Length: 374
Image (cartoon, rainbow, N blue to C red; front, side):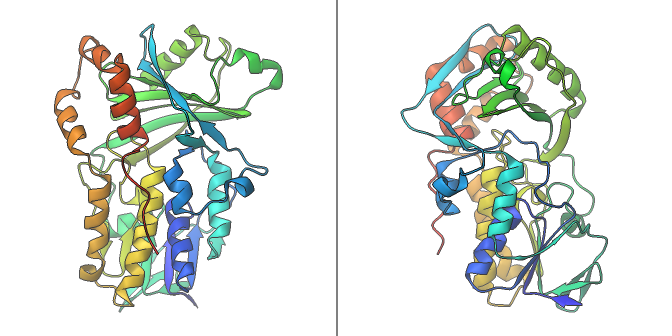
């Protein structure tokens, strides 16, 4: 039986950030993941400058041999509409990364002991200890395994489908001979919303790679909406008319409404395991990383007494951080359910609304500073 101070189930950004922060405080940490790294993880994949600061990423070192695409603008519109709004900035507001590279980098840098290619078959409580796979014992267990995390199932039961986003994505290397036919600027990702605003698609060129995806709250409508989005991109000559691929799918919860408990005695959930994606955009990388960092800080402050009461400040604090802002709440009453295109167009056709609400608040969260953790 191996032992550690904290056992983390899941080696994605949330688990790696948590492990990295704990290791800085001298904790013995084991990360278990059913995948081996680097692993294929399709994701639109951009990180904001706040994440770079929070994780203390050396940009010069990171971009050596890895994809790191500065983003200085976006093109935003409605699927099927002939026009879109261009929003440009005089500095990088985000950076495109490939998740297979980024996740591997964070996990290797975390300093944790790694148990990769190991699916979790059993979790049980023995006194004040958690025992996983009858092989690892720890007083503190962190669930970081995404929407279907086994630790989340242990704490909450079967996954709740309320507020569940279903997405399809693909990412592939661009053939240099066809590069001229991919009519999308690397520094300007494109975002196109459904007319009912219950989903959106994106097309993002990250240096030598193209990422295309589509996500919706209504999973039953996803295949048809995704196909229509691809046809829309082809008609705009954003992607070649002959482009075809096999989609990769995944699902995750947004932070509102709250449908999962994230804390119990000796256990915490972070990232998608807790259902912490931003409710406005469905973006989950920053909430995952920040939840991992805050969870680690909470564990350190608990000083070995991992009761639900002592860990509860994590859930309350982080829910506030990812909750919809007052501006977002007002708009959510105006914009959502089955909005007709006639009403959606004025919003998404307004350069002011696109820049200051859709981009700065919903996608970039530019108004929210980086975490200040010791």
